[in-house]
Length: 416
Ligand code: UTP
Image 1 (tube, rainbow, N blue to C red):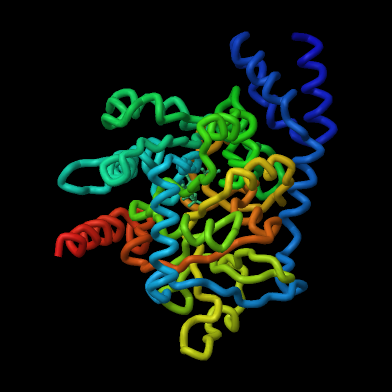
Image 2 (cartoon, rainbow, N blue to C red):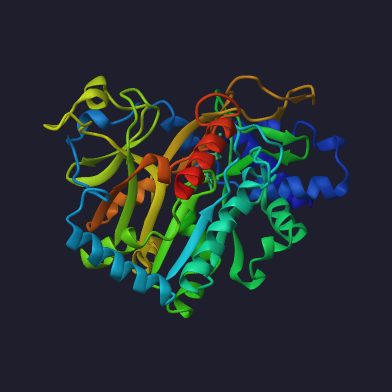
């Protein structure tokens, strides 16, 4: 223990992070040991680099940005449509598809105390987001006679609660052995002065390393091998918070197979000029995403010859990957992005603070950065009302209320 303490003292002193040991003497032996272990696991030099990086502005200006082609699911020649549908249906019904849901995020904007997937959006049925997603798997079971495996990415902070929720709800009567969980990595959060935050007196504040953390986690937990062992070739990866995500769309899969692509991205048309969504583009010739925070007015407003937004393909985090790409992604080193978030912390007096405004830097890998490393990608544009009902904020735009309406309208239209 003495050795560990000495090491921790040296580290925090070299990197000016003395606040981490501020309450050390007040802790019991177990807490002391946990804290010292946590300090030992931190790469302080890397954290310093990440902090310095927060001061650098985005590099969009130095890139050549172009628009990107897409195919419109509802505007395909009928021959092509039928071919995609046939091939895609064959792939699903022969068990070539698995689904991954990324549910490791903190859902800070929604502000729900548990994992986002456990949230009840206010349907009469009282279904949680996870149950709504599970219904889609059951639909596939009914339609194609296939029980697709479901992998759910959690984070250290929400893994226990997530698994427990499934247990308590009997896995929504979906076969338990088809639902698997894996956990993404975490990285410390910094305040605006570069100081690592304490979540508790004895615990450093660490946050999930972004949706791009999936590529690493998939390997760490042998998910890829598990998928390969089942002869599955395609993996749909989506977020937990789009309750209209079409997890098994034969057209998306058919398009990828027929056009010989490694990734097929589902998109929907941007609703209005300043909508706060990321859109697809080409960055120096490679498919990528421009976030709304970094786009220029010209990019937001430019239209094509048909009057549609030139950069109008919204990233809805509904992407289909060939398993080979996921294997390759093991070697990929995604860039680190800085995100500004509200993070609870213990202040210098030992008082727990629940900030009203964003107060910290979090470092994340972004899922979509992987696109820039792949050549064969196809964009398939669907209809917003059939594909996209996001739950991000507690109220207003993209909230449970708007998602519930979209969800109910979708089912009413299906019945009509
Ligand atoms: P968001 O970027 O919207 O983040 O995640 P969030 O955590 O849900 O919400 P805020 O920004 O804190 O309010 C999009 C999807 O990616 C997952 C989320 O769970 C969601 O399904 N995600 C995000 C992860 O799985 N891990 C992460 O580290 C971040």
